[in-house]
Image (tube, rainbow, N blue to C red; front, side, top):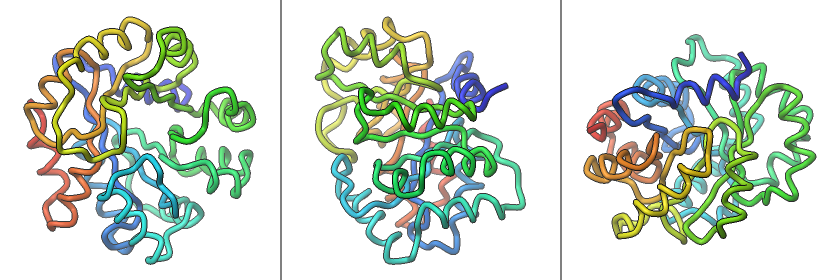
Amino acid sequence: MLPRDQLSDALKLEGRPSLVAFFTAGYPDRDTFLDVLKEVCSAADAVEIGVPFTDPMADGVTVQRSSQVALENGVSLGWIFDQLAGRDFELPAPVLLMSYLNPLYAFGFEDLAERALETGVSGFIVPDLPYEESGPLKQALDAKGLALVQLVTPATPKERLAKLCSVSEGFVYAVTRTGITGSSEGLPNDVSDYLAAVKSASSLPVCAGFGVREQEQVRRIAEHADGVIVGSALLEALEAGRSPREFLESLRP
């Protein structure tokens, strides 16, 4: 089975929502990266590893802070691949890399896809890459069976929503609000109508995120989507020295 299909299958759960966890590689301490990854994988159904970047324009304060610290700690895309290659444990959940385009472009798309396949990465999420400009990256990933996940938002027009859902791979990332990650404002009142529209347009699992930090929010999203994405709240738990596994398990309804 291709990695992108394994990712999709991992998010199709019966009786409960899937949980997708995001954390920035090498944060808060790069020496504990593999330990954190192992623990997060034990509690999540899929894991997004954030590649630190100097100008994370879609990210809120928490993710920006984690990215800056990771960069100061010497974390890079190549370092992440080296760490994944040197791990001494299996990945019980599919792993994706979430990165802005520049680090991927600098690495080289063909080398990127080859290295990802070698190290157990199932796909990529690239927030600043419009689908219309994704051809070269998508071609390289397709050759290795890797996913390129598309993001949609409440502001995505109906026709474009249908297009992005039809071309996404692995799952569809439904951003629950316009703006940046980590909002503490709670979920928009019309989130159910929005997620219903995404679900009706997608044949893949729909996972929703941005600002999810409480079990009640997970329960509410799970009524209308296949999975829930948690990022900033997990980073804050790591900052506080909490067990990522215990924190993620506390979110499950």
